Image (tube, rainbow, N blue to C red; front, side):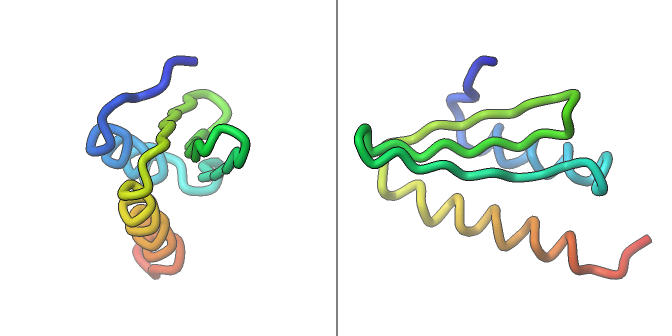
Length: 78
């Protein structure tokens, strides 16, 4: 599975993937201290989106995406 290099592409694709099938989509984060890498994975078991970073500035972006996904999950929109 190839990693998406651009954060904006990953964030918009992850949001679109969630909106397409909200019951199957999940967002997983994994930090590897040895390498100092944070990997974010968004999947619905058919499509898998991956983003990897070593940059500490990306943490705020990931936090923003996580809160945005939580807002989608808790909204009452049908």
